[in-house]
Length: 581
Ligand code: 9MR
Image 1 (cartoon, rainbow, N blue to C red):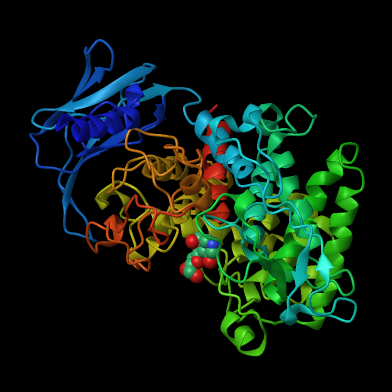
Image 2 (image 1 turned 180 degrees about the horizontal axis):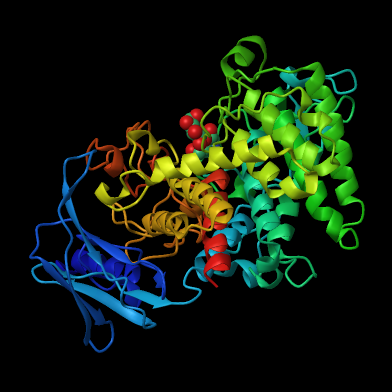
């Protein structure tokens, strides 16, 4: 009898450790647990006292292929802890390897080769398929994560805050499809905005790469890149969120309160669209304008879609001109209307940046500079990293992308270019002293809620800098942030579910919690360290910014997943693949 609990514990360990990648490794040797490009820089970080040398060995034969010296001691600005680098860039022979350090043992197994992040990019895009609302996921596409349809959203109510002449309170509208926002099942326009903008930009920046990029979704092989098919799932939902009477866009489609930890088909609470707002409307305008550009080239596959997008964008723009700053304030709304809505707020205090983004996308879609004529593009101010509440840089990226086609005045182009390059240069300053040799984490504020998306978005900014300058230092720093996300960080976790030797197993994600399957849904990016620790979850190791992470499903502040975090992950991994080819 006494043996039984032991056996159960052993079985759990065995089932969690089924793949060779899970073999015991030293947690003090931190590196990208997926792989390294043959010709690119390769470093591991040693986070323990060790002798001065390291060896790289073939994983299978144990044969030593490289010996090296550890770098100088570096000190973390967040915790005061010490690290040293093991630089094995010289090793360029494709294969599977481990790093071994006397007294510490071996690292996780990693590979060196070409296309090492292809599977990461594919999985991260496939993550959106798993987030789809209103559709059954059959085994053929979803494997063991197959599930019945949930949240049909064909009978959604107009909330008291959202009434208009033709749509009085409780009018029923149909608003199916879209992606679940995150660990919860609601659908938020503002967060869809940056997500779609990032994914559409990925397509516009690297269209050729997606000609042969299959994620095994129902639409695969329909002659349209899977990236765009996936985008259409959310685009069609977004189109339903515009009030046809006046062009204003509802802020979100939501339950009044979060669903419990249940599967989608068990969720039966009424859902509402709530208050039209300027942030939602301008984000919608930006996405629709960009989508009209992209889907114009697929008119035979999606007849009329591009037209609907630009028509909706124009209507949204006109609404916003009449309502230039209607902010979503959930608390104020709840004081005035019932039922109270307490789900994600995505309330923004300024819409200046949404104006910049929407205007830039409209300009690039319609070719009419009038759209930016009355907008202060804020080009003399430092660039900001895109977040759901700060989107102006998405507009900058688009203006840069189409500078030539739009015949952008050279002062404007130069200012944009300078803006991106100085942002990237600031990231790079003092890189040599960083404890993990990443631009991510230099500043304490990098560890915001969803810090993984900060790392990924910094990577994107660096890739723009690289394309503008052709200077490899930016490309390598971007790659460093991908390394960060895949394991070269203080927690030692590979933050993308389904990948790495030390993997995230317990994200705050209803679909992963309620399905009873040990492995979480794959291809989803965990939020990452967040010293705010707002969830007050018990598992945090300490208060240090870079360590405030716990792989525990109570931790919505450090271990949730979200569509706006996955998008830059897809971008960074796919763009890196496209670039390193
Ligand atoms: O990503 C959002 C973060 O910036 C906010 O600080 C946080 C608290 O308002 O909300 C995050 O977004 C959550 C949203 O409100 C609801 N769905 C889950 C999102 C990720 O945690």
